[in-house]
Length: 483
Image 1 (spheres, rainbow, N blue to C red):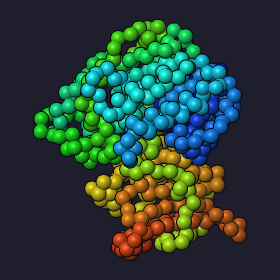
Image 2: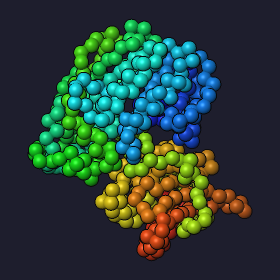
Image 3: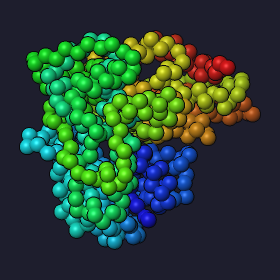
Image 4: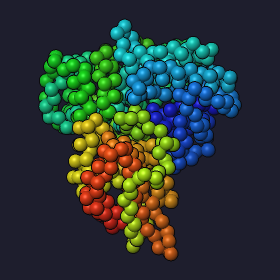
C-alpha cells in the first residue's frame, strides 16, 4: 500500500515509520524541511520517498502524490510562540485535506487527545477541532485518541523523570491528584498500524489508554520505585497555574510556553471511554510500570529512536532552519580556531558527533553549565534538553541549548544554531578540511549582535572564549575513548 506519513520526523512519526516499512508498505514521508530527514540506516529504505511541504503556508501549491491508500495525520503545534496554536492546527488540517482529497485515498488515521469533558484545555480543545476538520471531509477517518504516552523520549516520560530524579522532596500543585490513563508508546504504535484500512474502524473515534487509571502523584511515586528512589510529595492548594508552569519550567527541560500548556491540560481528567479495539486488534496493554521499564531498556541500550525535545516545540522561539542554515558574515563577530589533526580523522569526527549531553563540551563543562543555568533563569531552554542519542546526530536535533542545522558526517561538518537567550544570534561550526595532504579541524563561533547590548555581550564573554574555545578544539583532536 502507498501511505502518506505526516510528521515523519516527529516523536510518533519516527517510530511508526519502521513499523510501516516492516509491514511492506511504501511510505511517502511528509516533512516541512527535507534537511531534517535522516539519511542513514532505515531511512535509506527503498520503500521511502520524501515530500517537503509546510501545511502552515497559505498556498501549499500543487503536489503530485499519485494514488494513496491511506494517510496518517500526526502534526501538532502545541507550543506556538504566537499562543494561537488552535488556529494554526485548524489551518494545517484544512491544508492537509486539500492535499489528499483527490488521491483516491481510502482512510485518514489521526492521533488526537482524549477530550470527553466539557471543560477542556486549549490543547485538548484544539485536538478535538482538528479531528472535526478531518471528519468534515469526504474521506473516512479513524481517530485514535490518547492521553499521556509513556516511552523513552516522550514529553511526559522525560518531565516525570526530571522531577523524580532531581527532587527528593516535591512541593506540588493540587492538580497532581488529577486522574489520567497513561499508555505505552508500543501500544500506540500497535493501534496506529492495526487500524490501517480496517473498514470497521472507518468514521469512528476510539479512546485508548493503558489498563490503569492513575493520578499524576501515583505516576511519580511508581516511577521513583522503579528507579529505586525514595521520594516525598506534598501537595498544596496555593500554587496558581502560572506558579505551576514556572515550577515545571525550572525543574524540567520544557520551555515555559510548553509548560503552561501542559499545566492547563493536566488539570483535566483524561480517562478513556471503554471500547473493544484492543481486543479486536489483539493488543496486550502494558501497565505503567511495564511502560517505564521498557523505556529504560531503550535508554540503557542507547536505542532511543525519537525524542519530543528534537521537535521545534522544545524551543523557546519558533525556528525555521532555512533562515539560519547560511552563516552570515556582514556585521558579525567570529572566533576561528584551526588545528592540524595529527591522528585518526575518524576519531575526531566521532568526538564531534558525541559532543554535548552527557559527554559535555570537552573543556570547561562547569562554565557551560553555568551558562545554561543563566539561560534558564532568563527564560531560555538551558542545558536540560541534552541529546537524544549518545553518538547519532541528525539535522533538526537538539544539543543542549543548540539546534543542529547541518550534520554531514561523511564530510565531517556539524553546524549548530543557538537557541539560548541572547542579544543576537549565534552559530557554532565544526568542519574537517583537507589541505596539502594534511587534515585540519576548523572550529568557528559566529555571533551577530543585536544593537549595542549585543556588542557589549560579545566583549564581556570574549575573555572566556580564549579558554573555552581553545580548550575545546584541542581536546576534540586529542580525545581518545578508553578501552
